[in-house]
Length: 357
Image (cartoon, rainbow, N blue to C red):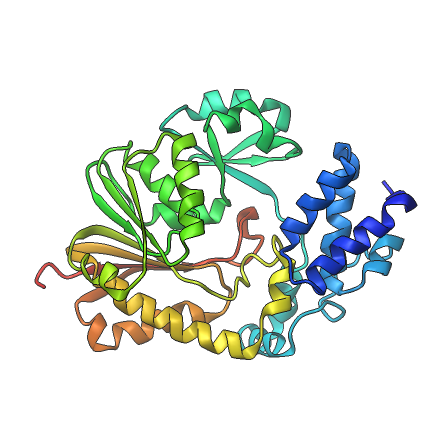
């Protein structure tokens, strides 16, 4: 479906909002839809056009339709240092990885078993062509207006990538446990833990951004999850007070986001070699500080939505070789690339702390 010429300026403005003003692409698209109120088919076209415009840094080519079938990492707007990192890491498979940045991602949701069964949720989401993928994960093949549905308002599901769900399940949170989500953000994984625990026990959700935790509180209310205690990290004391107290600690560190670029192509616009190097330092520090929160015999899961080993297995290797990691053993680890089983790119490591502190 071609975009009517009357909407071209609106698309250009959305592109400029991202490229010039630094607005998130998702926000720019939301603002565009509020302005033009597109029908489902046109909404899909507008979204795809803006994604391609950002991926290839060419809004005019996107509007002309000449990028509609393009999948070419050589033409894409990818930082040179990142191209070099991917080439060094993946060798002859580099174009496979870079091309994965340029594909569209399916919409996945997680059924909130605090409120509803998988079968009930599937029936409610039949108009959106919901398909059960694994566990409590559903793929939504017709997502338009999904998040204005009655099922969403009633807290029956949360948007969450299937691989992200798999990562969170590695903690194996169980009813009655004390769990700490060290980098909770808006709480997608926190809410999964609450459901896994049947809303019994306690979850402490930590983050440095008060706004994200406020979003979590709103999601908690909708989901009916009342065992979560959101806490803003204002000083290091907030974290230190929790040392040796948790059955399980989930550490989803800030990263380059190279595993989720296909969902957020504007990520690459702000990614520089300097920010990448800074992230590596931050990740190591967060892992070091928060692994201590696990009590003897407890579990720590480190996760990052990145395809770069420097943010994943190398961080774990360095931690285990350090004095801070002496009490921990690597129990399990895995890495996915964007598109593996439809999901995002993730690195996950599950560590166990020795019983003798």
